[in-house]
Image 1 (cartoon, rainbow, N blue to C red):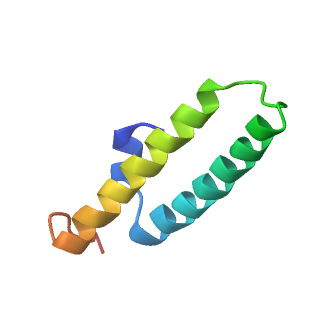
Image 2 (image 1 turned 30 degrees about the horizontal axis):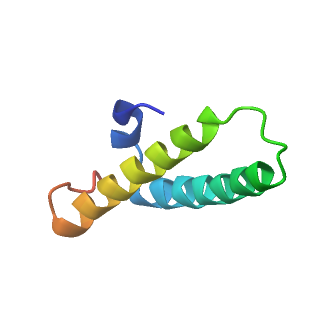
Length: 69
């Protein structure tokens, strides 16, 4: 997901996306441990997206971003 797409999402959508990515990351780690992981770069992509979502959510908390209501 691109940063511009993240900027268009609301807080609730970001929370849902974050939870989905955390679940996906956990599943990928299990697959890696069981040596069933087909695309090792997927872990890096998921971790990067998690960090970007957390950054946007933190900006909302600090007031650097405003809710578009």
